[in-house]
Amino acid sequence: MQAFRIHKGLVAPLDRENVDTDAIIPKQFLKSIKRSGFGPNLFDEWRYLDHGEPGQDPATRKANPDFVLNQPRYRGASVLLTRQNFGCGSSREHAPWALDQYGFRAIIAPSYADIFFNNSFKNGLLPIVLPEPEVSRLFDEVNAFVGYELSVDLERQVVIKPDGTELAFQVEGFRKYCLLNGFDDIGLTLRHADKIRAFETERLLKKPWLAHSL
Image (tube, rainbow, N blue to C red; front, side):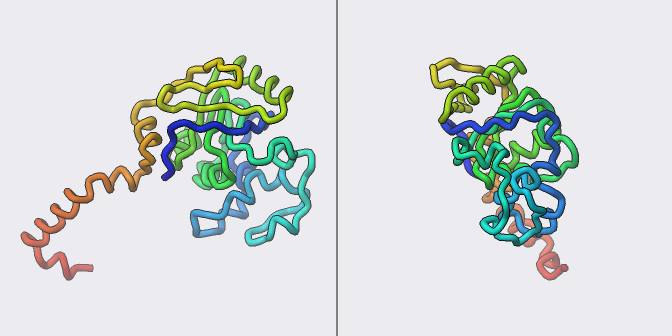
């Protein structure tokens, strides 16, 4: 998992409440047994005017010019600004995969659905909670200024606006530790790889028949 320390990026405003995970990555794309390739189908039913299916070349599809991510001024955005209860609906982990693989590193919203919130941290995506009035001001500023960027400093737990104003956010200590070091669940386990190998060696010495068990 990619570590998160300080990130500066263009902000894309998704001015919608209650965005569910089926909108983030529609159900037909969950057929894939791989954990990659979901970025081109992020917000698929909003980004395109035709119905999408797995394996289609995005270049052959008709983009929706009114959708925010298709507007030239937001091309390359890596910070998503959105409204309350983002990521509601089903618990699919594909939602943070799609956001990450599209290029987003952080999300800013007043609130999130719990499962999506937890899954985001486990996949290197930082979901930031800010008060609704602050989020509304950010929407106004993003809409008013082309090329609006924010810096996110996870170590200091602040969002830094272009004028230098800092917006503090909270993040649980263990989640912060994992993101700063790029540890997903597997990475956390592999910190103890030497102890695991030593345990397995000792166990086989005591119970050699386990080496031949199915």
